[in-house]
Image (tube, rainbow, N blue to C red; front, side, top):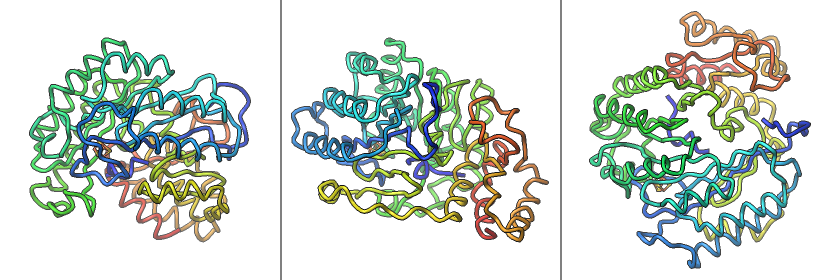
Length: 416
Ligand code: SF4
């Protein structure tokens, strides 16, 4: 099963640019009230203050971000912009507007642009949501994580159940249609009943998209010091597998498509930005700790402010070497098999020697026979893919294949 850590990381506007030109941009806004006990993201904890507008911290960060954005090359209109964090709903609205203006000036915006922004309960009000709408932000992602105060407290989250109810109420009042809700399973002491309750409450809230991640205990976090992975009070693996299956059952019965290992969407409401990652397509990344994938090379920015500011000052730098064909193939497999649409077989196999291809099929065969994976034709899966992705595809089944994805990938990687 994939984890929350692995998660963080289609143009209808006219002729397609060359496939290597990025159409998606991720902007990292790192400010949070406090660091949650499980979080190892690059963040800046600012405490309880609400208005960061006049803060030097934010001004310096915005200046560095804009300087970095200005050095970007390429000119395809963007089809998705994703403000992630951190807690982007703490970021001042005027600064957000300035970033959007820069992005539009530099790249242009496609006609059907998706602009996503992550929000946390207790960090926004009605006027703020209306301003997001005015700025063209048309997708919000609400970080709920759990509906029980005892779990929220144990996670080190700053919000409580009443803030969640208020947040959902505000989203309803402004009529926001495209919004996602995040939950975490596998919490310390979490029971199947707790998880069932969170899923039921999440469905009742009426989001168009839902992410359910399995908790990852990362070294260097409070949880990393407090808990041994997979040891009590963390639920055993059999229980987290039951939680995964329960989420699949509850949400698919509730009308959601299980389109990615950890993600569910109502028809047409998949996160288009994240599809870019999982399809292994190019994207810009700007800001502290952000990763980009340009010209076949992945670049991760420094994770501390001082190092990031120094890195921005040193731009432009010599380009990173592109990934090798083998690395690209492994990444395409690792990312694409997260998706229900899977991966196209022809481009995947074209660089393999006959011996490697035989090893690939030998390795896959038992999983296909057990029903954990399947070969299918693109036509069966709908129109969103591009013609070059057509023909036969390989995918893991949901939920049984998804549950075993780590093992299947490890076996494939060992033979390729
Ligand atoms: S709000 Fe999100 S980004 Fe901020 S500390 Fe908590 S988990 Fe990390």
